[in-house]
Image (cartoon, rainbow, N blue to C red):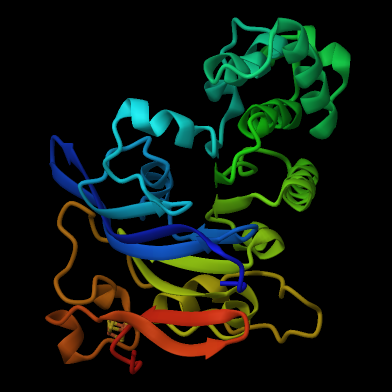
Length: 325
Ligand code: SF4
């Protein structure tokens, strides 16, 4: 954490999905905090539960256990009506803006909707607000009359971001928001998100499988494996020296160091495929693929705890190789 006030505090969060093959343990006893104005990056292989976690913390999914405290309020079990005023401060940007924007509605209608739903301003005032929003995300006033299919992928994502920030939210969960875009467009959208954060002071939970994207945005990074967070640390520390064996594998695969002064890492090969989240391994869930596994790792789940503290915040790891507090 960066010393700012805690905005979001998640503890012991569990979200399981029923499926024909059994219960998918998508999120299993996860805990972390996000400070005001901070970006927490959430990384891990596809299917590790990061999208489910992102949706659960803003209550798009109902949690099965644990607590979510947002801005000092326990929102874990708030009903629809009580959640309504909180919702405006919890927004989400999805990977595919084409799927998340109604194709039959013009951008003016899409961007007016949050104001209508939350009863903000009158119809004339909303037109002004829409124009201002378009300007903030780098689009022009005449774009208001167009429909989503008339935009490029990057422009569509700008519309989706404009909708997410319309009500000046305190937290935006960005779920792979640039992974469907060309690399040059990715950089533009990342810069836009950074600028909007600098202007508005909002926090991001930024979900990505792409560590180089996370490296440009995150203040801290949480590494997720098979429904659990296995390491969480300030970005520069994790980048310099990942501690958890799974983090070491992930970070060794980054082709380019974050800064030219950083040494290239030796690539650590990943062993095998991730096990099924329907029937995760006993003990440490990473043990069948871990190059450092010991006999106790097969039976005893490691405790997630603090291994070091710095000015940038505590570093937490779940691994028997480390003494945790
Ligand atoms: Fe590897 Fe054991 Fe640490 Fe799990 S607890 S990451 S198996 S060393």
